[in-house]
Image (cartoon, rainbow, N blue to C red; front, side, top):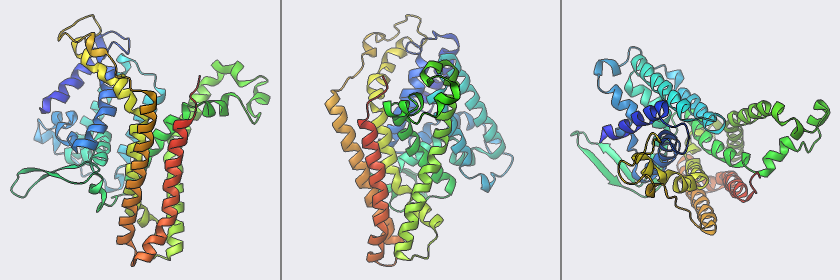
Amino acid sequence: MKASLLLCFCLAIISGLIGNQDPYRNFNMTFFWISFALGASYLSAIFGNWYDYLNPWKVVCSTSKNFSRGRYTYPAQFAYWPAVILYMGFITLELFGNTRPFSLSMILITYSAINMLAVYLVGSKAWFHYGELFSVMFRLIAKMSPLHYQTTAENRFEITLRFPFSGLLHERIEHRSLLIFLLFMLSSTAYDGLRETSLWFNIFWRDPLNIIEPLLGQHPLHAYITLRPWYIGFETLCLLLSPFIYLSLFLFFLWLGKRLTRSDLSVTELSLRFGYSLLPIALVYHITHYYTLVLSQGVKIRGLFSDPFGWGWDLFGTAISGRLPILPDMGLIWNSQVWLILIGHVASVYLAHAEALRSFPNQRQASISQLPMLILMVIFTGAGLWILAQPLQG
C-alpha cells in the first residue's frame, strides 16, 4: 500500500521526461496538479491524515535508518518557515509557472532532492513535521476530518470517529509561522479566484486611474507584450503579500476584541489560540474554487493510467471511456458553493466561540470578544461569495 503513491510519482516523473508533451495527454500533469494537489486535500478532510503513512518521500527515506536520523538538530527558530517558503513557491508555480510535463518532472525531481537533503541533515521526523509542505498542509486539513488515527502505548494502531471539525476544538497553533501557512491557504485560494475576474483584469489593463498610459504614451492594452512580464511580477507580489494582509486583518480584529474585554492576553497569544478557527473557512474556500476541476479533469486519470505517456496505448481498456468528465449543472455548482462556504463559516464561528470560553474568565467577556471575530468571518465569507459571483475574464 505504501508503495502505491510512490509508484504513481515515479510514473509521473518518467512520463513527463519521455512522454507526449501535451498537458492533457500526459499522466503527470493531471496526476500531480489535480489528483494529488487537490484530490489528496479532500481525501485528508474525509479520511484524516492518511498521507502521514503513504508520503512517498517519507517512504523512500525510511528505507535507511542511518540516513533518516539526521546529522543536526532541527533549529527551533526555523519552525514552519521552510514549509511556508515551499508552499509559496508551489502556488507561484501553479499560477504563473506555465508548467509542461517535462518542466513538472524537473520540479518533482528538484523537490525530491530538497526533501532528501533536508532529511539527511535534520532527520525524517523533524523535516516531515515542520518542513515538507504537503505533510504540513494535509495534516492541517486532517484535523477537521471525522477520522482520527493514533498509536496507543501498546503500539496498536487505532482509528476513532469524531464530529467533523471537532479535532480543532482543543488545538492551539504552535508557532506564528504555522499561522502564516494557514492564512496563505486562505489568501492564495481567494486571490486565485479574484485574479480570474474581469474586475481584477481591468484594474491593471484598463488603467481606470489613468496612471500607466501617461508613462507609456499609449493604453496598456496596446503594450500587452511589453507589460506582460511586469503584470506577472505584480500578480506574484500580490500573491506573496496576501497572507500578511490577512494577518493584519486578523490581528486588528483580535486587538479590538482584546480592547473590548480588557484581556491580559497579548494579541500574539490570542492569534495562536484563535488561528485554527479560520481553518474551516480556508478548507471550504479551497473546495468551492477547485472541486469542479477534480470532476472535469481529475476523473480523467482513469484513462491516463491506460495511456500514461500519451502514445496511444490502451493498457486497461479505459483510454477513451476513462477520460469522460463529470459536468454538474451550473445551478448545482453555485448552490453547493454557497452552502459549503456557509457551513465553513458556521464551523469557524463555533470554534472561535469555544476557544473564547476557554480564553476569557466568564461568558460575558467571551461573547463580547467574539463580536470583532464575527465581523471578520463575515468579511471572509462575504468576500468568498462575492468573488464567486464576479464575471470571469473574457
